[in-house]
Length: 101
Image 1 (spheres, rainbow, N blue to C red):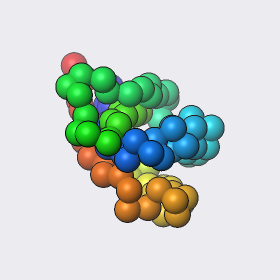
Image 2 (spheres, rainbow, N blue to C red; image 1 turned 45 degrees about the horizontal axis):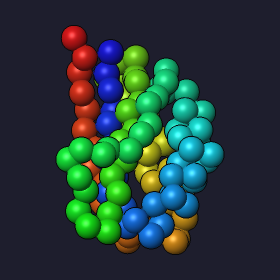
Image 3 (cartoon, helix red, strand yellow; image 1 turned 60 degrees about the vertical axis):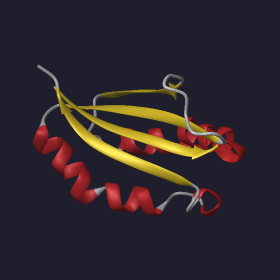
C-alpha cells in the first residue's frame, strides 16, 4: 500500500473556510479521479503550529506506485490549480509518498 501525504500549514484566519472546502469539495474531487482507495483527514495538534497558523494532514491511499504516478501526472496539476483564490498564497503544502510494509 502507498500513502500520498499532504501536510498543509494555513493561516488561522482562513483555516475553517479552507477545512470546509477540503471536506466538501477538494477531497471528493481527488477521490473521484479513481486513483485512490480512500483517505484520512485531520488537524495536527502536536507539535503546536506556528502562532497564527493551523496544520492539517491528508492521507490518500493508492493501490500502488503506478496509480499514484498517474494521479500526479494527469490530475494533480488541474486540482491544485482549482484552489479558490482566497486561499492562494496563504498556505504552505508539503507532499510525500509513504510506502507501507
